Image: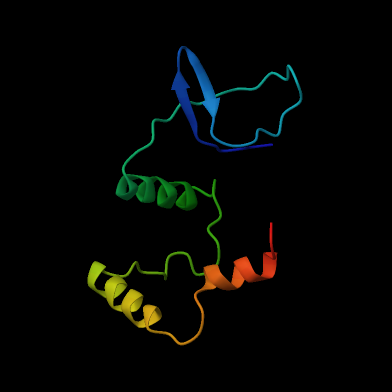
Length: 97
């Protein structure tokens, strides 16, 4: 089993930031890779994919991030959409606490 997860080093110990799929006292092998800025992380992902170590989801490379201007325009359009905000709909479906 190969599992990649993020952890924080605090007070001499690594603390995973999510659940760990291990048995109690199970021995594992660790490879420490400091988090890189996003653009470098993307380069690493592409290198792992090129080496056949990682399989990218369909359409991964064809998705281009939108610009800040496009994001703001989209937020403005969605903010003017008719109807209730999603947060209100969810609160109504949950009912009274």
